[in-house]
Amino acid sequence: MYEALMTEEMKPWRDLLLVHKFAVEEIKTKLDILDEEFRNIHDYNPIEHIRYRVKKPNNIIKKLDRMGFEPTIENARMHISDIAGIRIICSFTNDIYHVAELLEKQDDLKVVLIKDYIKEPKANGYKSLHMHIDIPVYLSSGVVPTRIEVQIRTVAMDFWASLEHKIYYKFRNKAPSKITEQLKICANMISILDERMLDIKNEIGSLDLEDETLTKDVISEIELSDDSESME
Image 1 (cartoon, rainbow, N blue to C red):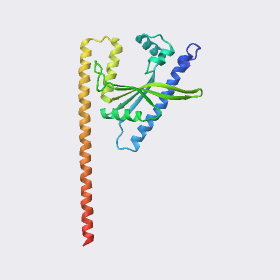
Image 2: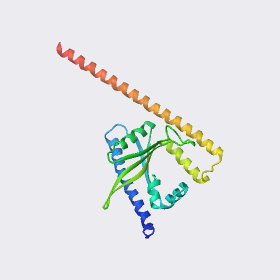
Image 3: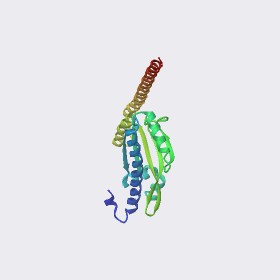
Image 4: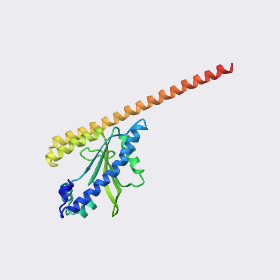
Protein backbone atom coordinates (compact mmCIF):
# COMPACT_ATOMS: atom_id res chain seq x y z
CA MET A 1 0.00 0.00 0.00
CA TYR A 2 2.71 2.46 0.98
CA GLU A 3 4.59 2.08 -2.32
CA ALA A 4 1.56 3.52 -4.10
CA LEU A 5 1.79 6.63 -1.92
CA MET A 6 5.35 7.60 -2.87
CA THR A 7 4.40 10.37 -5.30
CA GLU A 8 5.16 13.88 -4.06
CA GLU A 9 1.46 14.69 -3.88
CA MET A 10 0.65 11.61 -1.80
CA LYS A 11 3.61 11.69 0.62
CA PRO A 12 1.68 13.60 3.33
CA TRP A 13 -0.94 10.83 3.28
CA ARG A 14 1.80 8.19 3.42
CA ASP A 15 3.32 9.90 6.46
CA LEU A 16 -0.09 10.10 8.16
CA LEU A 17 -0.76 6.41 7.61
CA LEU A 18 2.74 5.38 8.67
CA VAL A 19 2.43 7.19 12.01
CA HIS A 20 -0.91 5.48 12.63
CA LYS A 21 0.60 2.14 11.60
CA PHE A 22 3.34 2.69 14.20
CA ALA A 23 0.69 3.57 16.80
CA VAL A 24 -1.09 0.29 16.07
CA GLU A 25 2.17 -1.61 16.46
CA GLU A 26 2.82 0.12 19.81
CA ILE A 27 -0.52 -0.84 21.28
CA LYS A 28 -0.39 -4.28 19.63
CA THR A 29 2.72 -4.98 21.68
CA LYS A 30 0.90 -3.96 24.86
CA LEU A 31 -2.08 -6.16 24.06
CA ASP A 32 0.11 -9.09 23.04
CA ILE A 33 1.86 -8.88 26.42
CA LEU A 34 -1.49 -8.87 28.27
CA ASP A 35 -2.75 -11.74 26.12
CA GLU A 36 0.42 -13.79 26.74
CA GLU A 37 0.31 -13.03 30.46
CA PHE A 38 -3.29 -14.22 30.81
CA ARG A 39 -2.63 -17.34 28.75
CA ASN A 40 0.40 -18.42 30.77
CA ILE A 41 0.05 -16.99 34.28
CA HIS A 42 -3.65 -16.60 35.07
CA ASP A 43 -6.39 -19.21 35.01
CA TYR A 44 -8.57 -17.21 32.64
CA ASN A 45 -7.96 -15.01 29.58
CA PRO A 46 -10.60 -12.32 28.85
CA ILE A 47 -9.23 -11.77 25.32
CA GLU A 48 -10.51 -14.11 22.58
CA HIS A 49 -8.73 -12.45 19.67
CA ILE A 50 -7.60 -9.05 18.37
CA ARG A 51 -7.81 -7.40 14.94
CA TYR A 52 -6.00 -4.33 13.66
CA ARG A 53 -6.38 -2.03 10.65
CA VAL A 54 -5.37 1.37 9.25
CA LYS A 55 -7.81 3.15 6.94
CA LYS A 56 -6.86 3.70 3.29
CA PRO A 57 -6.65 7.31 2.01
CA ASN A 58 -9.78 7.00 -0.16
CA ASN A 59 -11.81 5.80 2.86
CA ILE A 60 -10.50 8.69 4.96
CA ILE A 61 -11.45 11.14 2.22
CA LYS A 62 -14.93 9.62 1.90
CA LYS A 63 -15.47 9.90 5.64
CA LEU A 64 -14.35 13.54 5.68
CA ASP A 65 -16.77 14.23 2.85
CA ARG A 66 -19.65 12.61 4.79
CA MET A 67 -18.70 14.74 7.80
CA GLY A 68 -18.70 17.90 5.69
CA PHE A 69 -14.94 18.61 5.84
CA GLU A 70 -12.40 19.27 3.11
CA PRO A 71 -10.24 16.19 2.38
CA THR A 72 -7.03 17.51 3.95
CA ILE A 73 -4.43 15.94 6.19
CA GLU A 74 -5.17 18.51 8.90
CA ASN A 75 -8.89 17.70 8.90
CA ALA A 76 -8.10 13.98 9.00
CA ARG A 77 -5.92 14.46 12.09
CA MET A 78 -8.42 16.76 13.81
CA HIS A 79 -11.74 15.11 13.04
CA ILE A 80 -11.18 11.38 12.47
CA SER A 81 -10.35 9.29 15.51
CA ASP A 82 -10.43 5.89 13.83
CA ILE A 83 -7.76 6.21 11.14
CA ALA A 84 -6.13 3.43 13.14
CA GLY A 85 -8.53 0.91 14.62
CA ILE A 86 -8.14 -2.01 17.00
CA ARG A 87 -10.92 -4.46 17.78
CA ILE A 88 -10.68 -6.66 20.85
CA ILE A 89 -13.09 -9.58 21.03
CA CYS A 90 -13.99 -10.96 24.46
CA SER A 91 -16.10 -13.89 25.63
CA PHE A 92 -18.28 -12.07 28.16
CA THR A 93 -19.55 -8.53 28.75
CA ASN A 94 -17.69 -8.13 32.06
CA ASP A 95 -14.46 -9.01 30.20
CA ILE A 96 -15.00 -5.91 28.06
CA TYR A 97 -14.82 -3.57 31.04
CA HIS A 98 -11.90 -5.51 32.53
CA VAL A 99 -9.83 -5.08 29.35
CA ALA A 100 -10.82 -1.40 29.13
CA GLU A 101 -9.65 -0.89 32.71
CA LEU A 102 -6.32 -2.55 31.94
CA LEU A 103 -5.77 -0.14 29.03
CA GLU A 104 -6.70 2.86 31.18
CA LYS A 105 -4.00 1.84 33.69
CA GLN A 106 -1.23 2.04 31.05
CA ASP A 107 0.76 5.16 32.03
CA ASP A 108 1.71 6.21 28.50
CA LEU A 109 -1.84 5.90 27.13
CA LYS A 110 -4.34 8.73 27.44
CA VAL A 111 -8.00 7.82 27.20
CA VAL A 112 -9.64 10.82 25.53
CA LEU A 113 -13.19 9.53 25.17
CA ILE A 114 -15.26 6.46 25.97
CA LYS A 115 -18.50 5.69 24.14
CA ASP A 116 -20.42 2.93 25.87
CA TYR A 117 -22.81 1.49 23.31
CA ILE A 118 -23.36 -1.52 25.58
CA LYS A 119 -25.18 0.39 28.31
CA GLU A 120 -26.70 2.70 25.69
CA PRO A 121 -26.95 0.84 22.35
CA LYS A 122 -27.38 2.67 19.06
CA ALA A 123 -30.89 2.88 17.62
CA ASN A 124 -30.22 -0.03 15.24
CA GLY A 125 -29.18 -2.30 18.14
CA TYR A 126 -25.39 -1.92 17.76
CA LYS A 127 -23.42 -2.71 20.92
CA SER A 128 -19.73 -2.20 21.63
CA LEU A 129 -17.41 -0.20 23.88
CA HIS A 130 -15.41 2.43 21.97
CA MET A 131 -12.31 4.09 23.41
CA HIS A 132 -10.44 6.96 21.76
CA ILE A 133 -6.85 6.73 22.95
CA ASP A 134 -3.81 8.95 22.39
CA ILE A 135 -0.56 6.99 22.23
CA PRO A 136 2.93 8.51 21.80
CA VAL A 137 4.78 7.42 18.66
CA TYR A 138 8.55 7.96 18.96
CA LEU A 139 10.08 9.10 15.66
CA SER A 140 13.57 10.39 14.92
CA SER A 141 12.06 13.89 14.72
CA GLY A 142 10.37 13.61 18.12
CA VAL A 143 7.24 12.30 19.81
CA VAL A 144 3.99 12.33 17.83
CA PRO A 145 0.84 11.83 19.93
CA THR A 146 -1.44 9.72 17.73
CA ARG A 147 -5.10 8.92 18.24
CA ILE A 148 -6.52 5.47 17.68
CA GLU A 149 -9.91 3.90 18.27
CA VAL A 150 -10.24 0.71 20.29
CA GLN A 151 -13.48 -1.25 20.00
CA ILE A 152 -14.14 -3.93 22.60
CA ARG A 153 -17.07 -6.32 22.19
CA THR A 154 -18.18 -9.90 22.75
CA VAL A 155 -18.08 -12.62 20.09
CA ALA A 156 -21.86 -12.34 19.73
CA MET A 157 -21.75 -8.55 19.36
CA ASP A 158 -19.02 -8.86 16.75
CA PHE A 159 -21.05 -11.41 14.76
CA TRP A 160 -24.04 -9.03 14.69
CA ALA A 161 -21.91 -5.98 13.81
CA SER A 162 -20.23 -7.86 10.95
CA LEU A 163 -23.58 -8.75 9.41
CA GLU A 164 -24.95 -5.23 9.91
CA HIS A 165 -21.84 -3.78 8.26
CA LYS A 166 -22.34 -5.94 5.16
CA ILE A 167 -26.00 -4.94 4.92
CA TYR A 168 -25.12 -1.25 5.41
CA TYR A 169 -22.74 -1.26 2.45
CA LYS A 170 -25.04 -3.36 0.25
CA PHE A 171 -27.95 -0.95 0.65
CA ARG A 172 -25.90 2.23 1.27
CA ASN A 173 -27.72 2.87 4.57
CA LYS A 174 -31.12 2.43 2.90
CA ALA A 175 -31.94 -1.14 3.86
CA PRO A 176 -35.62 -2.19 3.68
CA SER A 177 -37.45 -1.62 6.95
CA LYS A 178 -38.16 -5.35 7.25
CA ILE A 179 -34.43 -6.09 7.34
CA THR A 180 -33.62 -3.33 9.84
CA GLU A 181 -36.44 -4.59 12.09
CA GLN A 182 -35.07 -8.13 11.91
CA LEU A 183 -31.59 -6.85 12.73
CA LYS A 184 -32.96 -5.06 15.80
CA ILE A 185 -34.69 -8.26 16.93
CA CYS A 186 -31.42 -10.18 16.46
CA ALA A 187 -29.56 -7.52 18.48
CA ASN A 188 -31.99 -8.03 21.36
CA MET A 189 -31.57 -11.81 21.11
CA ILE A 190 -27.79 -11.44 21.19
CA SER A 191 -28.05 -9.27 24.31
CA ILE A 192 -30.08 -12.00 26.01
CA LEU A 193 -27.54 -14.61 24.86
CA ASP A 194 -24.63 -12.59 26.31
CA GLU A 195 -26.47 -12.16 29.62
CA ARG A 196 -27.27 -15.87 29.91
CA MET A 197 -23.75 -16.94 28.99
CA LEU A 198 -22.41 -14.59 31.68
CA ASP A 199 -24.88 -16.09 34.18
CA ILE A 200 -23.57 -19.58 33.31
CA LYS A 201 -19.98 -18.42 33.74
CA ASN A 202 -20.79 -16.89 37.14
CA GLU A 203 -22.61 -20.05 38.23
CA ILE A 204 -19.61 -22.18 37.24
CA GLY A 205 -17.39 -19.79 39.22
CA SER A 206 -19.63 -20.21 42.27
CA LEU A 207 -19.47 -24.01 41.99
CA ASP A 208 -15.68 -23.87 41.71
CA LEU A 209 -15.55 -21.68 44.82
CA GLU A 210 -17.77 -24.13 46.72
CA ASP A 211 -15.55 -27.05 45.65
CA GLU A 212 -12.45 -25.13 46.73
CA THR A 213 -14.00 -24.35 50.14
CA LEU A 214 -15.07 -27.98 50.56
CA THR A 215 -11.56 -29.20 49.70
CA LYS A 216 -10.02 -26.81 52.23
CA ASP A 217 -12.48 -27.99 54.91
CA VAL A 218 -11.60 -31.65 54.22
CA ILE A 219 -7.88 -30.88 54.40
CA SER A 220 -8.39 -29.02 57.70
CA GLU A 221 -10.29 -31.97 59.15
CA ILE A 222 -7.52 -34.38 58.09
CA GLU A 223 -4.86 -32.12 59.63
CA LEU A 224 -6.84 -31.86 62.90
CA SER A 225 -7.27 -35.64 62.95
CA ASP A 226 -3.52 -36.14 62.44
CA ASP A 227 -2.76 -33.68 65.26
CA SER A 228 -5.11 -35.53 67.63
CA GLU A 229 -3.49 -38.88 66.90
CA SER A 230 0.02 -37.50 67.46
CA MET A 231 -0.98 -36.21 70.91
CA GLU A 232 -2.18 -39.64 72.14
